Structure formats: C-alpha cells, structure tokens
Amino acid sequence: MTRGRLRSAVAATALAGIFAAAPIALAQYTADPFFESTVQLSQAVGFELALQRLRIVEAIDVPFDDEFAEIVENLTGPDFERFAGTLAGIDATLADRLFEALDGVAEAVEAGEDTEVKELLPMANSLLNEAYDLVIPPEIQSDPAFKGAIMAQLLLGEGGVAEGLEEAFEEEWEFANGWGATQRIKVLWTEVRDLATPQQQADIEEMLAAIDEIYPSPEPPESLAGIDPEEAETPAQRIVGILEVVVDAQLYSGRDQVRLLNHLGITAATGCAHYESGDDQLGREVMYAVFDHYAGETTGLGALIGLFAPEIHEEAMEAFEHLVTVEEDGDEGGNADGDDDDSTAAPVDDASVTPVAACEAVIQALDEGRAILGG
View 1 (cartoon, helix red, strand yellow):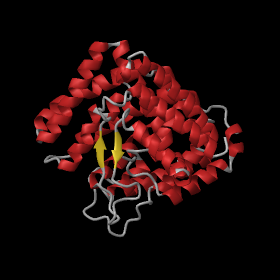
View 2 (cartoon, rainbow, N blue to C red):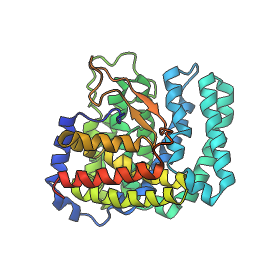
View 3 (cartoon, rainbow, N blue to C red):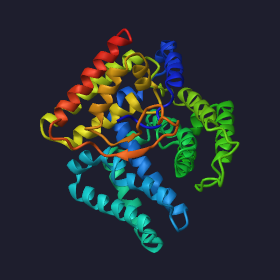
C-alpha cells in the first residue's frame, strides 16, 4: 500500500536535489516553523482542511456529486484525526460535539439533503473555529512565520492549490480543494501583506490573480482538455518563495533531507511514547505530522528513498498504513495500464501489528533512509 498521488520519482528526486543543494537557505531566515512547530502545524492544517471542506460545501449547489461526497468524508477522517486527541484532552465535550457536527454534514452531503446541510454548516463552522482556538492559541495562529507555513502547506500540500488541479485529472472534484485553498490563502495574505515590500506585494498578487483564473469556482470544468496539470504549481511555488522573505521563515522543510529525516525520527519517537502509554489518538496526531513530511507533496523525501532503497520505503509505508489514513493506489507509478486507482484507506486494523510496533518500524525505516542518504 502506497501514498497515492506522490510525484513521480524523477520529479521528486529533482526537487530533493534542489533542496539538498541549497543548505545555505537554512540560515537565511529567523524562523523555521516546520521544524519548530511540526505537530502544531499538522494540527492547524487539519482545522484548515476541515474549514476548507465546509467552505466548498457551502458554495456547491445540490445535487452533490458522489465523488464530491467522498472528499467531504475526510472531515471525520484525517482532518479530525490530526487534532482529535489534543482537543479531547482540553475539552472532551467539545470534541464529541464537533465530531457529531462534522459527521452530520458529511452524511447530509452524501444523502443530498441540501436543507439539512445548510442548517448544519453554521454550527459546524462555529465549533471548528472554537476548537481551533483551543488547540492552537490565537497568539500562535497570528505569528507571521506560523501563518506563512500554513499558507505554504495550502499552496503546495495535499488538498491545496497545486495539487488540486493535478489531482483533478484523476478525481475531478479534487479541483474544488484547489479553489477552497485559494480562498483561504487570499485571506491569510491580507494578514501578512503589510510585511512585504511594494514589489513583493505586486508579485504575490500577480500570482494570486493567475491562480484565481485557474480556479474561477469550486465546480470542476466540463473538460480538462488543453489544461496543464502543473499549471497551478508555478504560481504556488513562486508565492512560497516570496513568502519566505516576507515572513522571515524557512518554508521548505525538505531542503536538507538528512536533517529532515533526523528530525522526523525524533518526532516519531514522541508518537511512539504516546502509543506505549495507550494514548493512540495523540500518537496518531504525531504520526500524521511525520507522514506529511515523509510522504506528502512538499518534500519529495519518500519518493527519493523509494528510488534509492525501495525496500526501505515500502517498509515505511507499510508501517504508516497501520497508524494514519493514507491515499493509496496499487502501484506508486499507477496501474499497469498507467491509470491510478486511488482511494482513501483508514489505518489497517491488524492485531498482529500493534501501533507501538508500527511506530518503531517507522523510526527504523527513517534511520535506514538517513544512512542511505549519507547521514
């Protein structure tokens, strides 16, 4: 089982090579949020993606497409799981109410109940924002470096601007995620815009205008013929590059792959400690953060390990599948006919592989991967 929609090995390796060749960039900025706030940023992304799905639901007219309903199901899956344990520890009642509200929205969308959806959305949004402020205090949310990291993830990560268009060629309603992420990025940009020079402001706003043209609405176009799947990638990457300077923060965690692997190993160890103490929810939160940086769309790390040591990458992915929800396909490069068969898979419930054992297997694979890359 593999992480679906990984970039091709060649593209990922090129990206990783660029990052690895530019270690000096690590010293250019004051803040390093993906290393300093790894789990908190993953939690924040969970809230952002959940709010994004509600934003899309509100903008879409019935009848809801079946494929769109599958995207909304993530509200109570990976979105909620990224922060569920921490929220329950702070306010268990709120955690239960939020889950019920999100589940209600997902079920109403699946059933095509437009009236019920409209009734549930205000409560779901209100509870999500209340929970967001409890798990990620407003003073942290307002920090420019933290905000820049969220923007970078929404621009380049799973469910974001660049990936929304690319993934729409496999599942058309992924397009809506690109639109939803764009709306949030525009809001966040207004909150850090005053930190930018006039030229930086003009450059980012030029790129935002280009992205707006790609995503004029959440509805996918009738045909994607003639559209470059990577069309949103260039403006998204340019924005992140400028944002690094604007918010004075390192926003590419994969520039030094060995450093990243070492950090992920240390972070994963805290997740293993949670599993060992029986707190699987908190362990899962940590492993989502580790998984994002290993197999997500922003670092190329997993694909790079898969290229040089496929058996180590396979071990890592098999371990992750026991811990977090993943997007899977039959073969990382697609099926034999060249087409992906993507689906969302919840953590595997296999009594023979305990969460502790799976977590330790992740750490071992990360250690072996670091050795492969010369760390």
